Length: 445
Image 1 (cartoon, rainbow, N blue to C red):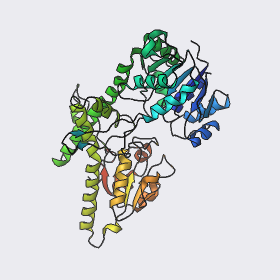
Image 2 (image 1 turned 90 degrees about the vertical axis):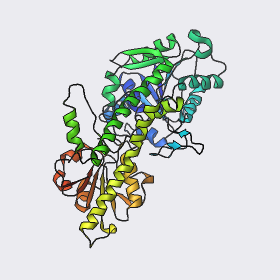
Image 3 (image 1 turned 180 degrees about the horizontal axis):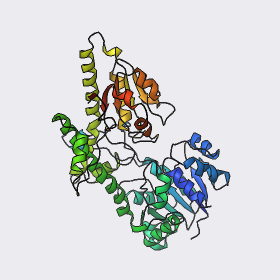
Image 4 (image 1 turned 90 degrees about the horizontal axis):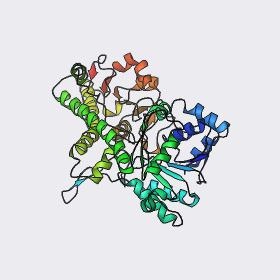
């Protein structure tokens, strides 16, 4: 099939780069988003997110007429759904983990309302021969739900769940598997797992992605494709949980965890990851719960890893409280109001602006809510704090924060933090969750 026009539903951290890459191959792309600001920004040839080189690709695609954005879906040959899959009734950065009143384990439940809304939005413009691909990371069975929602909205068309290979509409799941900060390169170079509801669905989806994917398109069924993405991120979450748990054990035993990991990793078959303040982003911090929600009795290790990583921010906050207490003990003429705390990094990983599920942001907000003195946030990749940041928190430059703060909390290993101000930060009471200044500080918690 010839794909002359592609519609990408959701122009966020995955949807916009995907739309831009298709457009860079001289394919007409119509991007759809409910955010009018995002739509207007893209139509000016600009971007509303931070991703290296994306601005140049989007500007070229818009200027040459291959990419435009709108809030209302239009007819196309293929539709890619790349909208969020958050948790139900779960505030950002929190997870309702624990036991129910009846003593049964609780866990976050995936919210598929954005996917359903996207499916119902494109349904009126579908026509025979169209391909619909769900890219959103989803719990097992979500692609089948999309097919059901579309069939309900368009009874005049046939779908794979009832008509198999001869259906009017082809449906597949193809999860993204890219690293923020390297999205454009990895979209092109990485292998793609393509899970069609039928063999014909997979064949058409592969043909679409092969317009830019240099890696292999590996074919499976929709359910296995959904589980593949969840498995990849759960594997990483378990490994991060080991490092985070190890850091807490070493702290209790008065062992330098960074040195310990360097030594252990000299073993030819050991590769321990680096600990941090928790796990963030809309993948590793979220996807394991999709497995737990479907198989709560079986996913014991996956659940425990999530609980370990979700507990790390509280551990960091307690370290900050201890640092404040020690400073006041050493400076009896001061009160807690005199103690300024600087939190370095709010994004969920280095050198991006993405605050989704960020433990660094959650930690900073908690400190600001509890500490009576000034709390300074240093995040070089954003221009303003989110509305939920709180009144007792201000966004500062590295220089201003380092000059004013008594206590430094290193939460994200941004390149700028590695390059500048090391010596001045090292003179503070430092809670270094990333091991940046491990060998330089005289008060490293």
